[in-house]
Length: 168
Image (cartoon, rainbow, N blue to C red; front, top):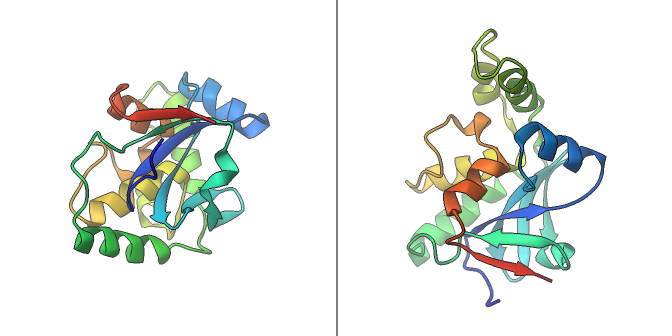
């Protein structure tokens, strides 16, 4: 696969206990997402917080890219997106987002507790929320949902097989 463009997002299938919980809870093989920032680097939100990492960490994993699905960002948009994404580095993981998604899953979407309201107010994110928030900052929406309720599954379904996939 060619190198992604700055701002492209990816959805990946990983393994491990947390990955399996996300997959089972969402009825999807896709359990993690992140953004490409250029020069082989990605930004992602993990339980340890938001950090930069080399894209190569997902070599040998099934991955879907937004590359080719949307029109590319202009240079100015890509730089604005990259700079905004970097403001999240070292932020904490979005526990209220996880709680909101868990409640939605357990109550089949019936809003008993407005945990998603808290999740939109906190300055911490989960992986797919990071993608949604950063893309919306440059005027693009990845979902009609609130940022805190966007799941990796939603990002993968948005691509509907139209994105480029690669297995390394």
